[in-house]
Image 1 (spheres, rainbow, N blue to C red):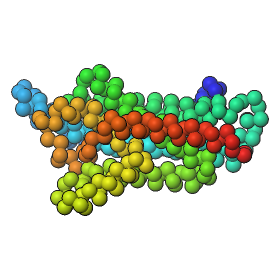
Image 2 (image 1 turned 30 degrees about the vertical axis):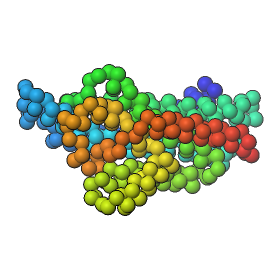
Image 3 (image 1 turned 45 degrees about the vertical axis):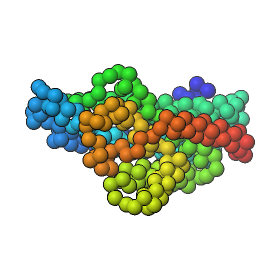
Image 4 (image 1 turned 90 degrees about the horizontal axis):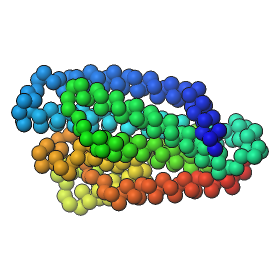
Length: 289
């Protein structure tokens, strides 16, 4: 299993998808630096009184919301397009036919691949998460509780095993191109569900249409929980329940948090990931290559 894990890292480091991800990250961070500087110039805020401190923290929150809003797309891009051809693509190229006749149990191959994709994605998430916090800290204020920072990072990175698991599951049934399209659509559906939840409350609709929108939003997020995990990460990072009475959170539009995912939803996301991992492994073990 460790050999497959290391081999996966080596293959990913040679693939263009990783190069494209690094290029996207560099462009994003450069743009984010200038945006954060324009929004949160320390020189315009008096931090010597309570009002100034709250204003500085509010500015930092908005910058972080903006940064993680776009960072979630970059992280999802890496998780999906590094693993969407994990089974179908290698079967089409004859890689599996050359390797699996050797004494390597299929479950070890599948698990080693999964660990390789997930570990690289989580490592990238750590770098991206740290850089966003560092840039924001230069121009505004950020949370500094180490427990909160660790918890929020784990939620930020939890999207990686989720998306890799769904992608490898789909790769056992679909061709590489079809799986890439389906994964993109699934992630887009989850994102749309979260966006509907964010803006539904500001439309001032009647109760029945509003309930319909909330139902649609809930179903889409159950199908793909990735966006809800990112919103839960922001809730933890900002200690939302503690500061909601001090700092207005309803004016951040599509960059805001919307409805707060519950702890039960986190449990659902975990079970969702475990179930699809087991089904994907079962499919691969029985698949005729």
